[in-house]
Length: 147
Image (tube, rainbow, N blue to C red; front, side, top):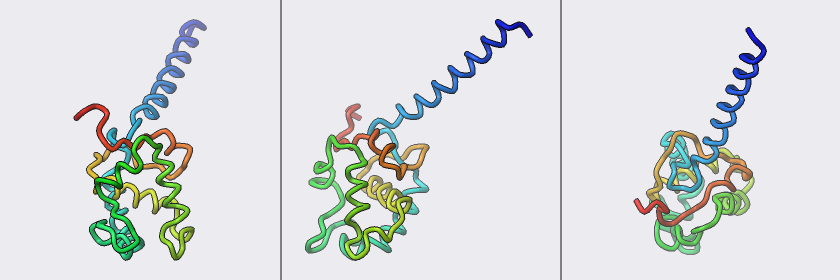
């Protein structure tokens, strides 16, 4: 194989790999792009019922001091912020009796369930549990595409 052909193949392979990596990161810019999977939301529902429903209610309706986690004030409270802000709040403060006792992956599943209950669409990749990746996903109360 000629040197020029080898260089062309290497360059094309690098371009495709870089494009795939950039498009994967760019695909989920906000919660309306499908920031979690259905399977993750199913796992999250089970974890939510075990760890969150006592305070927030089985239907996320809120109870006494614990706010509702559905629609209205809840989704607008986080509007325009990276998902990492909400995730960090979950990590550091929930559940009140043992916030660090629930693993990060489980909290990401719970957040995926919360997203599903707020009518954000599912996607092809699970919601990450790393703040560095969650910072790239914007929480928009309304679909910026206007759908």
